[in-house]
Image (cartoon, rainbow, N blue to C red; front, side, top):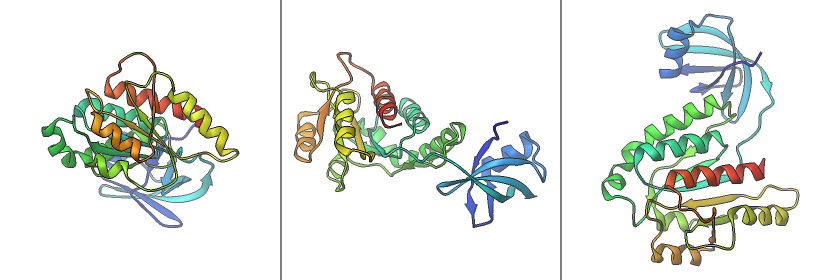
Length: 243
């Protein structure tokens, strides 16, 4: 039987604890009792855990044995800020698909009111990612960064294949670009970064900035996709090739 998986709020070498909403659900809905067994994600490791004690809204586990688990994919998503309900859906699905890091970015065409409110949404985005990671039985949590200016995100240093979804690109597909990166990397998995624009796409100045920083334009095909559809499709394509 597959054990339900929880993501620990705190842990040490021998124990882990759940607090807050996770613990409340385990205690009140699943009727937690000492001796019940679950899988526990503690940091970047997964353990077979047994409930050792319940105190108030906290559940403590003894960590019995480490469980083999797959790491996150070396995949970062630069996600321009757009309508929050659709953006939350994109974050949830990107998490399920194995993305390692999501960087919300403020683009020229990001709605000003949404951009101003973005920082207040980060805690909610992290909660959505945590729930999606738990549901999809991930062995880790993706990092959801604070919202930053696109210029800062595009200029980050680091060795990675940088791919820009661009509406005007018609010859080089995302799939081909990732396949080329895999062939060049040999036995290693290359780090992949994918940038997805806001509703309306990138402006010419932003495309020029990406180009100057080594980002390569790629296409998902001839159809014009909504921002959330493009983000989820891109993550699915890359994840399928990296798995």
